[in-house]
Length: 131
Image (cartoon, rainbow, N blue to C red; front, side):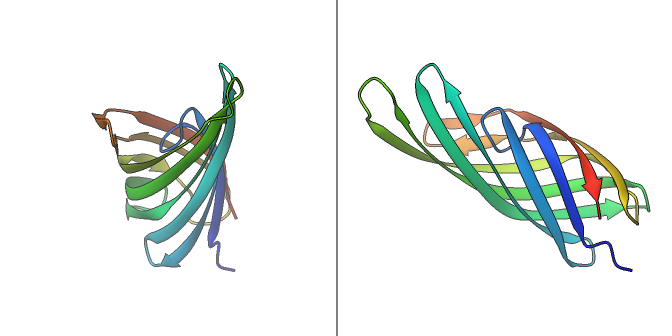
């Protein structure tokens, strides 16, 4: 049986505070990732969805993770209903524990992000399941 899927929750990463993510192995060590989040903070509603490619390099359980993602962000403020939008580009480099078959996965990455305001250092940590 091929275990081609992974699902996890992440704090940080390409989203503002958290995200729910799904990955599907495309070919060999290459995975396609989609995810997103919904956040209400200080009267602002923010929705983001991100997608990108992740490559895993290494052994059966311990991997170097390399990724690139784009995150469109949309939202509005309650007080005046003024909408806003932004696009965030990000990369990730870090560690992933992921078994070759079904099981628990853990990832810890450095995720620098770039948007119209410039470059910002960021991080991500996630837990989930490979199936």
